Picture 1 (cartoon, rainbow, N blue to C red):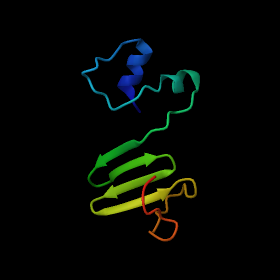
Picture 2: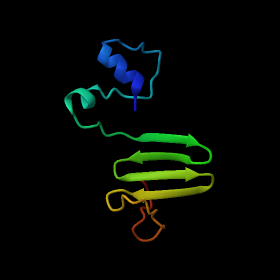
Picture 3: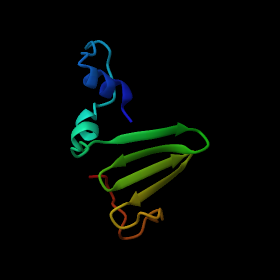
Picture 4: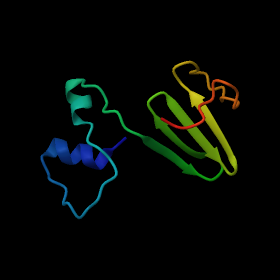
Length: 92
């Protein structure tokens, strides 16, 4: 959750431009039930658990040298794509 940008936006405080934030305010999501903006989400930076990225229907988890790719439109349970015919050869 992007706490600093959201709290600053709710409080009406402008974050200085030199303070480069990688987050986005979700004030409208919380207060007006707006849709979340479409964007890439990175989370997890944990050596044992791995690092993950989510973009639209794709979720990728990297643990050491192992990379897992999930198509969440077709699989919310979490079975990685095995590199077969349904696996994309490039990321959109």
